[in-house]
Image (tube, rainbow, N blue to C red; front, side, top):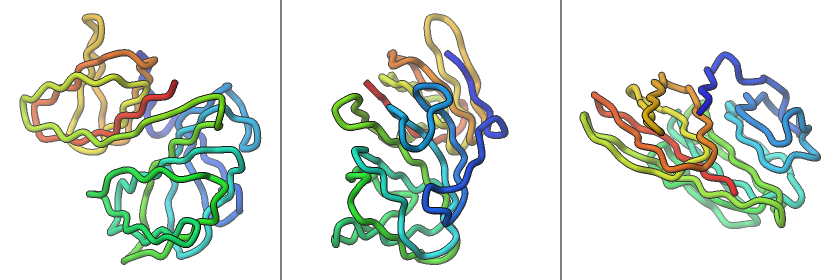
Length: 185
């Protein structure tokens, strides 16, 4: 397992130049926006506008902070808030966002069609609760999460990400917490 602290994420401009993203992890390491196999990133959406097009990519978006936005994908509108389930859509479909009330931070998980697949879900933990999950990545959203694997415990603060290599791990916490779990295969 490897912990990535928020300040270690790589800042870079959006593909369409409309904002900035914090790249959490990419495969292969050092890949660019045109040649990655998979990619995890967090973006701050501060204004209404189009999303970048990613031909050949499947994309899942999860709102982490802010009120939310209406995301129109290929003419179909979706309401996304911090309580919404992650939304999967083709990265090459025309997509645009209309903010509901101020800036939003979202998580993007993207995989190249035919090479990789992914699944993203939110996990809510009550104080003292333990949950087993199959995960490649665990992003701690609130509270403090601990991840147990093979007798090793890694503590995650808010916005820390753990790379778990798609194994079954146990999430535990002494206080209410929320995490995003992503598997890529």
